[in-house]
Structures are given as structure tokens and as C-alpha cells.
Image 1: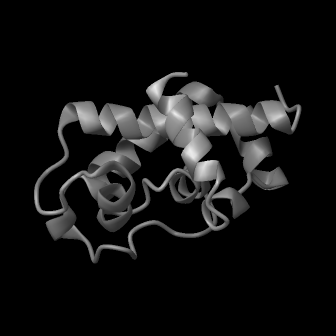
Image 2 (image 1 turned 30 degrees about the vertical axis):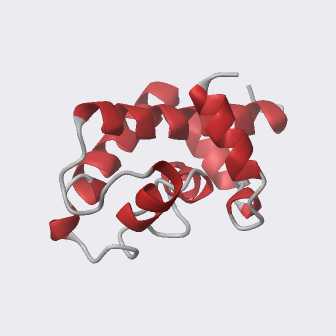
Length: 122
């Protein structure tokens, strides 16, 4: 089992984290824009909303609805620095490294792809 699969399994055991799912309008958006655009958006959100915690009020930077990446961030505990610290032991008071940003985006995109597959939306 890969690190990503292991993390997704652990998250699936959380009642809160496992309560998030893509909604029809999000699936339609993904189909319209394509996974490459969704991944580009994920990088943008992580770099601009999570990388430097001094720029935001931690815990309030990721909406609970709207973009499919936002839902994936809550499902994968990549929604705020507090969750990154709790689930992945990433310190809050420093910039994210490129490796950590890549990890977050890979986790988000893997969750989205699994969600699409489970909903038979491919």
C-alpha cells in the first residue's frame, strides 16, 4: 500500500473526513474542465491559501462548498495548517516545502479520482 493509499484509508476511518463527497455540479465541473485544470487549481489553492499561514486566518481559508478541490481538501485534511499538523505532522509556523505542496496535491487528486471511480463517473 502506498503512502497516499495508507493516508486515504486512515482518513476514511474518520466519520468527519469520510462524510465529504463530490456533488453532481462538482462532477459536471470536473468533466467540463478536465483533471489537468482541477490539478492546476489544487496547486493554486495550496500555494496561495495554505503555504504561508501568516496570510490567512487558519481554519477559515477553505470553503466547505463550491470547488471540488475544496471538498477534497476537507476529505483529505489538507484544508488548513491545523489539519496538516494533526494528520501529517507538518509544522504550522513555516512555509510549506515544494515536496509538501506536491504531497497535498497528489493526495487531493487521488481522492478526487477515487471518488469519480466510485461514483462511476469516468
